[in-house]
Image 1: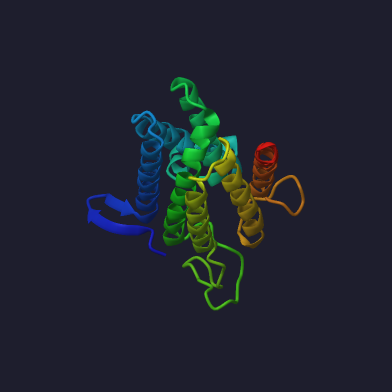
Image 2: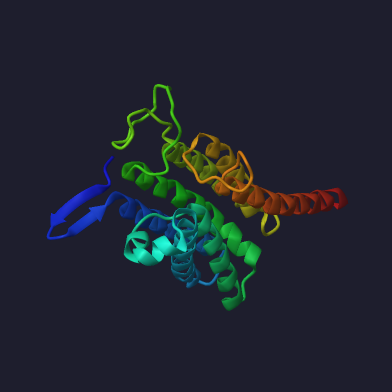
Length: 251
């Protein structure tokens, strides 16, 4: 593990997770800016979206992390410990959805169109952030005997590098979404495809991850959230696809 990238002394430490989290947001900002420019939309949208998604994403991720890892008594006994600890990506995604909806209302912009703009950027940023998780030694997988298995300092066995799996799959998904974004599709199509694939990927990879169990035996909390994501955007994708097919028939 390399949780610390640079120790400047006197308590000044640069953590790998923080660096890649920031890098993920910066790359996402660049992607959103490029797409907003291509669509000739309000040039203030990228900065507004970045700030809103950054704040809401961190708050959502922290709230879910606390829910999964600490009781109210434990949190009140040592709040600083839990505030400076980890985050839950599913909670961050929920927070980002809320932020995009708020921005769409403030900017009087179509929510589905904003989702299409943010989705590829979010997926690429998420993939970059997972590199930080790998270096930090968190969110690792279950025991693995494959040649590419890794071992973290607190583990005595090799495990799946699920963080790297996420990074590679998110890179491929981003390339796919970036390619289809210019095709003639109704608003919401790109994000529906992206979030269905993201939800499916997250559901499957949870089977080889150290994760938090849910009230449904055999499934984690993240898997239930992934199923909800697939269901919501799967229905939306079906509606949009049916509409597109209908238009083609009429033409």
